[in-house]
Image (cartoon, rainbow, N blue to C red; front, side, top):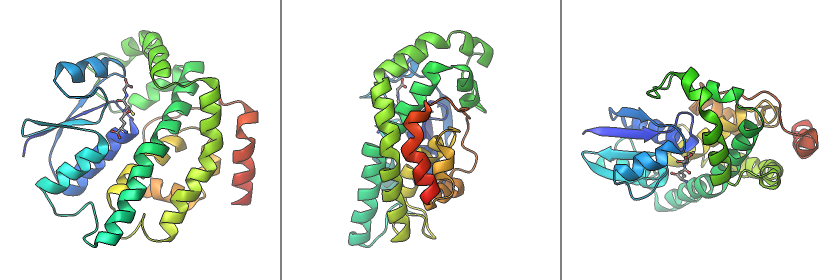
Length: 251
Ligand SMILES: N[C@@H](CCC(=O)N[C@@H](CS)C(=O)NCC(=O)O)C(=O)O
């Protein structure tokens, strides 16, 4: 099978797609795209939407982390991404949907909000990437990309603050699925590959890490994505973190 995956370096759903390809043992080539430019590139390649991950599998275009999971499962059932038992599959799909629809975006908003305040950490998220331009040049021209990414992702003060305050309840849900064996079982599944990168990305923010790393959700991320690229030093207003601090203390 010929597989070419289009990603933005350190994008959490992109890492999800890579993890699933590796789980299946499917060899693939990766094209790294810069944020925003990725939208034009994907449209130019006639993908139906403008987000990563996107993949060409023997020429067929598939886009979206959940769509990619299903197509990989169809093309190569072993090792599976979903349990064979229908009830267990429903629970895994519920957790996977939560990861895609509820967990991914707030973490994306927090990151872009932070990068909007200080672009220096952005460089660390490109570690190991092949952007087609030297990283120093990419960093020099990063300001409009950051401004547009923050705008496209609606990373306003209000939304970023709301995203931070939603984090404890989302971590509770993830911990609950781990406790009930839906996530972090012996065999990793599509929901693990969906959720762990979002937690992994959150762990790259020094402000968020203390509230996550001692929890089962943090353990899941460390198991599934031990080398998540990127590091953002403290930048979030302390007032936003109060709920997280008491959460960390209680854990
Ligand atoms: N929920 C979708 C979301 C995909 C998504 O929003 N990807 C972001 C990167 S994390 C993207 O392509 N953003 C375009 C940009 O940053 O220019 C999925 O899981 O595939």
